[in-house]
Image 1 (cartoon, rainbow, N blue to C red):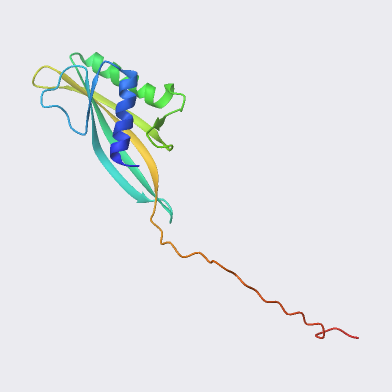
Image 2: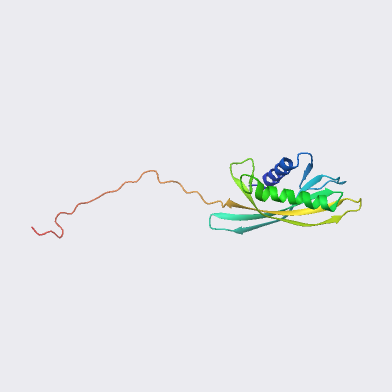
Length: 158
């Protein structure tokens, strides 16, 4: 699953929980306003899971701008609970595909004050997904023939 699909899925979930907010993807606004979310890629790590699969672990920073520190923390906490606990899929992030992703963790850090007086609260969500490794395709066997011989003389006493 691509990053764009994951970010779109996260944005849809944020909009479902907070319908009145604006969600920016991959890059924050030049002039942030209170009540806006930003989803940014923080880190991606890929490692071999097996001969046929690769494990992709992605960390996304979900930033929320607020006028009060309490509002920033409580909004991120509500989003964290929604992603991890409250949905019927028990944390499975629905995307456009039939597959689902799972949020492994959600970490919230203290809000920091920006120059314009706004506060920036950040939550980090970790999502793991397994991707199939490209395997060389071989031509299938189309026809199999076999021949049998019955040896009636060998080893039998008459």
